[in-house]
Length: 229
Image (tube, rainbow, N blue to C red):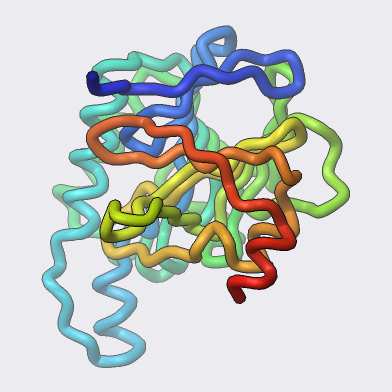
């Protein structure tokens, strides 16, 4: 049976990790996505001369539109690195700008600053260093000593089980924090067992795989992960 979401409680707040890679907080009527990286192909062409198919912005906005159409959130939080850099945000095609403006219409839209987009996004909404709602703190990058209830992105975590084949983008969840997968197209990922990620998570942490279903999997304990590396 396909499971479209995984239900959990973090710092007393109920959340749903969606198979799409978005987070829904029903009590706040809030949808959260991380690391859209809009304009990644434009930045790659501008900075390195790489000619990737320039469709990732539209593909990402299409995916986001599908999630918003179902969830109908009052608030959307984009959890940093929403644009691949500030110039990529400025260079968005008018059709993509119009699509984004339509998604933002009639709801509160929060741009959390990331390392790729530390300044104003220039597309409306509110740009903040972090955002708090319903006992949760939304920021771009996890802080090791964060209070319980931290929700972040930045790392693009991926995880897979033996025999599964390719690692899938995943949420990472423990009693203190939730790390979201990258939502954007053309985004790579970091193995959830990598020390940079595993050191942030408690031993009883879960990886919630995304894709056709939201599949919870226990992460290997820290010592096992360290031996693997």
